[in-house]
Image (cartoon, rainbow, N blue to C red; front, side, top):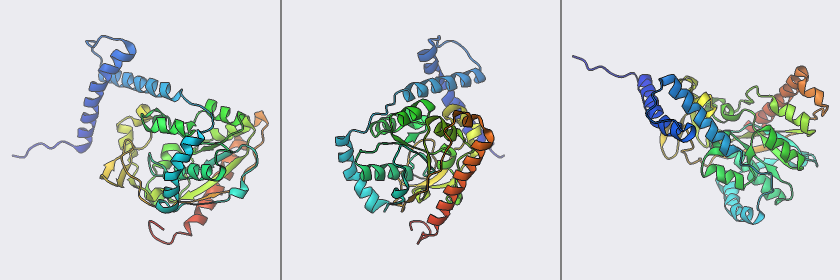
Amino acid sequence: MYATMTNPIDAGQNLFNGALMGITTPLRKLIYNDSPATTLGKKEETNLLVEGIHELINHRTEDWSIAPQNKEAMERQMMVWDVLLDYYFRSETTGWERLPDSASMLIGIHSGTWLTMDAWTLCAEWYRKFKGERVLHGTAHDVLMAMPGIGTYFRNVGVIPAKRESVGAAFAAGHDVVIWPGGEVDAMRSWRKRDKVVLGGRKGFIRQAIRSGVPIVPVATIGGHDTVFVLAECRKLAKMLRLKKLLRCDVAPLVLGFPFGLTFEAFPMHIPLPAKIRTEILDPVDIDNDPERAADTVYVDRKYKEIEDCIQEGVNRLAKKRRGWVFG
């Protein structure tokens, strides 16, 4: 009498498994030179897909450089960014006088899922102020660095993978580096947490600062979360779809954005809204450059808490400046 209805979660799993079977055969043939006739179980297919995707991502993230940005290309690009900074995002960046004279590690939060406009505007404001005379390298998630188009653009503007080798090389060259330790769990946190500092418990940046002998400069920002609205982080869905293994991502954000409305954003697919972005560079935090400190858990935990609290205080201060519920 009643037709059987498919559970939405089962439907999602079936869709994923179907895509899995379609993708792993060419991957297997390409990477492992196996015969297409080879029959593997579902678990083996999944493991093979994970290995294949990781190999492709790792291969593409090996291509990085700490060379300064091409000034001619950057000046052409800045004609667009000047308009975006001044009129679209109405960017306000303060605290430049707090920057140390030497190379520093900037630590901040960012938001807006894959297109973190608060991070992009900080890098654009930096270039506008220093005109390439002081080089800042942004850092990006491996998946973004591996993507065609976006990955190429990032490399052209000096973005490097958030890895020890690339970050260490940048500091050795006397360049500044900005890192967002919270990564995807920070960028994709729900809108109701927009003023919550999320560093994800990731403390490797402190050990890197110790090894490189550079101070840490906390950076507070608000506004990026209003460029697209993350309604839910959907961690259970991300776990079901094995996104941690596939794309090194713990969330599968349900967003409300332009032009597609309500979507699960597995990759960049929205146009950022014209939210006002405020950023403040905060007082530097001195880091002991004794190499043994990197193994001192108590010291690392204390510095992590100090930096997290500093950024949270800055975010709270900036949030009080909002004049409107969304775009103020």
